[in-house]
Image (cartoon, rainbow, N blue to C red):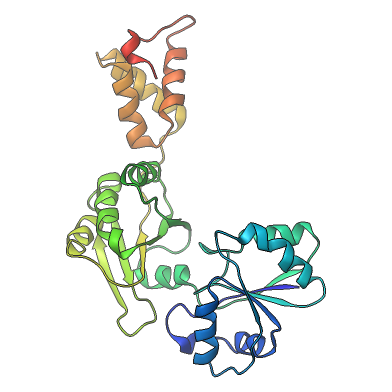
Length: 284
């Protein structure tokens, strides 16, 4: 079978007994970074030296067949550098292929940066969504945050320390300055720090830079999401008031998260058959 095993996210003392036993008896370990795995084995005092196979974002598809073949006759332990494999880490492709091949897949639960940050952030935990890493490019990051502006569940993000300040600035612009959030830094480590407050204040706090592993937790919107028909009605109202269709669509798409192309086409349809945009400059 294939065994997905969670590893400590910072503090080695969080290792589970089941993971130690699995590492002591493993013959094959598929690891995100074999050097990190070797340090883990040394840190835990494990003398067993299993065969290590590197499985990362760039080779997972190619290595999946080899690992599945091994798992048909032996247990293969799959670990990432920290936390549970497949959660913003390699492993999903392997698991999907293993299931399709009829290979049993199980897990050894353990530390989770997502759940740890959610627990200490002080924000609602009854419903939440994990958004992984935000896009690196500023324009793409802003577009994704605008699309999430009406999300009512608490949101959890992973972020690079180098981009944390910029991400918080964009969150304030997309969600509003007063949206509550938390920056969780170096979780379970000696320098663990959790800073809570409105995202605009968190952005100021992060202006001079942030160090270490970062998880951002942001409260959901308290406003009801705008339905697509209601968004189309907003567009037509703005146009009826003298606005240009293209500008009206951009404005409504920005605060509702609906597709600007879909809004444009629906607004044209609302004008009736044969309706055209006012001039070539107003094309979608």
